[in-house]
Amino acid sequence: MAGSGSVLFLFVIGHLAGNLQFFLGPEAINRYGDFLQSNPELIWPARLFLLLMAGVHIWAAGKLSLENRAARPVGYAQYQPVGSSYASRTMLMSGAIIFVFVLYHLLHFTVQVQYVNLTGRNFFDCIDPARRHDILKMLVVGFDNGWVSGFYVLGMALLCLHLSHGASSMFQSIGWRNRTYGPILDKLARVVAVLIFVGYTSIPVAILAGYGKEHLK
Image (tube, rainbow, N blue to C red; front, side, top):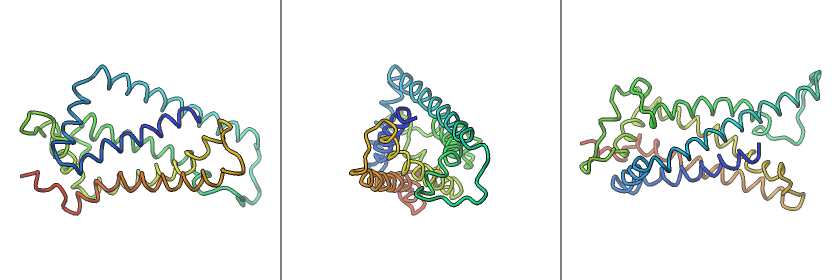
């Protein structure tokens, strides 16, 4: 659980760094996207490895959940959690919803299935003057729909709620946490989760506020 989670956590940060090139303009984000699409020998092994890590993470989550239930086959007469956060108590639920969100995200911007983008536009038709896939235009068109942007904000909120506990607990799982700096790790995990949320959601929020609309002309 900790090992696969740490890999996925690093991917979330790396993916954010790439996405934020949106604010550098079409040349930067389109060049970045073209580099990824032009090097399948790099991108496909990375995708398959991430898919494997996601599968391992889901399997580990299910296994731990079953073990916890087996350890207490009879539930509490009156459940009053002490010392646990809301994020830690809802890890399985938030993880399941995140899984659905990731599937939609892949269909929306990676596979580019027209029927899920709610715009009626074919994202494959977004081509820039250099004959590259126009990622900036695709993002502006895709996030100009308030329902889609709202779903992304909700998905990122759940992801960051998940990370606020997971990023800290993974240190405990591998034995790198103690009473001295444990509280520091907890606070640092929450800060990082908030920064990730702000970074990812800044794109749809900026588009809804009008940023990038000039590139649609």
